Image (cartoon, rainbow, N blue to C red; front, top):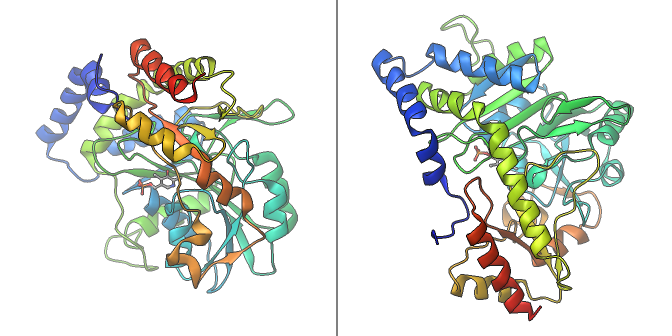
Length: 376
Ligand SMILES: *Cc1c(COP(=O)(O)O)cnc(C)c1O
């Protein structure tokens, strides 16, 4: 049996090696390492895939969020609402830019922020919401959009973990995650569902004015070279990463199917173990399973994790400390309400290996070991 890894990028690469290698080689031959035509080509292909008007590539997912927030013209101490149960990047840039993160609780089944919790946290200073589509499925965007409209708030979707997932509105309309709010942000970090061979990110919007502004911010605040209209940043997707992503985008749907299949095998195999709750799929979103995350009852999470490690099965806790309890935020953040669910989840979640290359033998081995632990 192949060694089990959280993410298996090596075997994924082997299957597309010739395509990827020749795509990289053509960038090297062109020596257009920055702003090569391939970057625009990838941005166009991604815009078509997502059915969104503008895709602005940038340096990484954290930059994407930063540039998105910078484009909104907020004032110091304005507030931005964000879930507490997420990766720090979702909230870090809020504080970094001098705004106040307001943390809200998530739903215990979907792990995603709820509209009700958002509404409770709104103050006169609230200007934006950052819903995170955690682990690969959507936050309840239809309800979030309704609240955003009611209170005149911007919505920045953090789609770093859910690129390619579809949202279905109550009227049957479907949209790709990241194209629903004012702005969508994503990451091409290697382990993400659409990952490159280094750092990369992108911003999506249907708003022409914001798109212009964000392009300018990402490029030192200039439209015309050496004419700097605003303070910006230097955040680019380089040509080699774009060349890789252009190939991998063609395989994204097949990768999604492989992840989905692996998730179903886990869920079927772990059915009936009393101490385990398998992931809940919400009706309004497809699930692209960036992570396959269990809830382990009776305080047994850490013991199970150790037992799996002894049996050469990696498993990870995403995330062990909710953001409102992180030292970095203690002075600057506000808590919208009690954040009990985020705290409880940080104690009981466990993510199993999830990637496109899991095979039957690896999965049945993992399932049998988990059963052995619970004597199920
Ligand atoms: C990975 C990730 C980011 C940041 O992406 P980077 O490219 O690593 O900067 C932001 N938000 C979430 C939810 C993520 O998982």
